[in-house]
Amino acid sequence: MRIPKLMHAVCSKLIFCVLLICINFSCKKESNTNPDIVLSDNDNMLMGNASNAGSNENNYLLRKAQYSLSYSRTRTIANWVSWHTESSDIGSVDRQNDFREDPELPKDWYKASDNLYNGTGFDRGHLCPSGDRTNSVTNNSATFLMTNIIPQAPENNQFPWAALEEYARGLVLGGAELYTIAGTQGAGGIGLSGYADGIDQDRIVVPADTWKVIVVLSKGNDDINRVNETTRVIAINIPNTNIGINPDWKYYRLSVDALESKTGYNFLSAIPESIQTVIESKVDDK
Image (cartoon, rainbow, N blue to C red):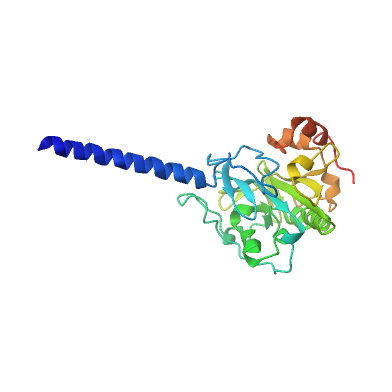
């Protein structure tokens, strides 16, 4: 009688292992942290994965319909957020203002919430702007998830940062489509209450700089193959401070190459290298 019982136990374990493998395989296919996803036209990450974000907890990839992002568990903010904007994204939906925790982060991770910014002297600054997602309540609401929010100095957020957001939407309404990546670098900024490395007992890092790269294309299809040596690329880096900020975003322009040196990221990595070499060396002057 022992042999059948042994065979039954072995078979049960084999079945369990096969099921486990199948479940893991299925999860990996559907996972939003898979950096090898095949991207289609207008995908939020079509121009590349700047940090090769994946399952690393400090370079953790989250892919949403409205934007994609690399999140840092240690910093409790995004490293970067990447999104595509075209005219159909811009509508008449009101700003939702429903700041809240992001439920897509792993359950055991510490999560930023809206009230943790109260009295800090820093704005709840958007990386992907609310104004770029006004075609539906769902899409606008997604921009208020705290994974898309950073402690941003008011003079930065409300002046040059906001001015570039408005300028970019003007380009879209004028017939362009944009691929944008915006993010954070370093630690330590100056808000209304002075210098801080972080808020919420330093669990949420205050970045030293905020930056952005925008690829400007005319509206069309097959976007990755329409990028060429003459494509306009806007890159900025703005100190996260309330002191001495120039309200004109153009003051903070630099080349993509210079921003890569500062951040360590590889922007526009999906574009052929021969084209990258040309467009990343230029400083926008329009």
